[in-house]
Image (cartoon, rainbow, N blue to C red; front, side, top):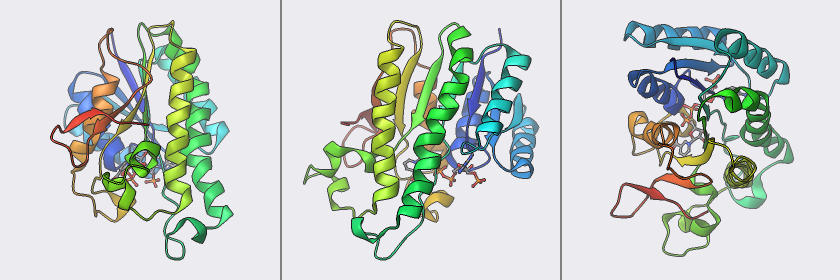
Length: 250
Ligand SMILES: NC(=O)c1ccc[n+]([C@@H]2O[C@H](COP(=O)([O-])OP(=O)(O)OC[C@H]3O[C@@H](n4cnc5c(N)ncnc54)[C@H](OP(=O)(O)O)[C@@H]3O)[C@@H](O)[C@H]2O)c1
């Protein structure tokens, strides 16, 4: 039986690496990208490595493209085993990057992608995920959205100056994750949030200290959880702790 995974924002960075690692485990990977040229190029590259990788156009802010992607998955596969909600933007630096320095325009733009887009994609694909034997949904979040980390003076998160859009969008992703996990708790579907850790990608001008391969590991772990694995958790890289991976406090 083919196991199929759809990853949004998979033409580069952590999403691309997630697709590569899931394909290496024998999954058919649907590389979601909003730009067809970049999406095709990424899928071609993975296929050259022997992966069963296919480009699927999906702009998470465009409901028509989401509906078309869901219709294609349904007609080609009938079900979906893994959904990785990975696409996100930061909104860029405004002013001095403090909470009061950003514009509402940026806040709305970031939420359109990171929160509303994630919900729209999940709702469109949920019927197909329900049809799979035991689907997994992974919402790629970030420790910068952890309220516990931000308010713990001993956490690296408490030292970080942040504008509102990106960090708070990831806090919203946490609640969204919990609410889907609650709705689906009597089904075999597991819904968890992943923390890649500070990873060198275009998102941060490659300033992160982890590689994209490492950044993809939490998503791959949560996408391949066994039947007795957790649901409704935030799991991934633990910054400044002895263990590399574990549960992160919301
Ligand atoms: N890098 C880190 O340190 C870090 C840390 C914690 C969490 N994360 C999370 O990890 C995930 C991946 O980030 P990354 O670091 O790999 O960033 P990245 O290299 O900038 O990749 C982001 C991906 O999202 C896509 N995307 C953006 N808006 C989209 C839209 N409207 N529709 C569809 N795709 C869209 C981008 O497509 P285009 O190429 O077309 O722009 C790109 O493929 C994000 O959720 C991010 O918040 C990253």
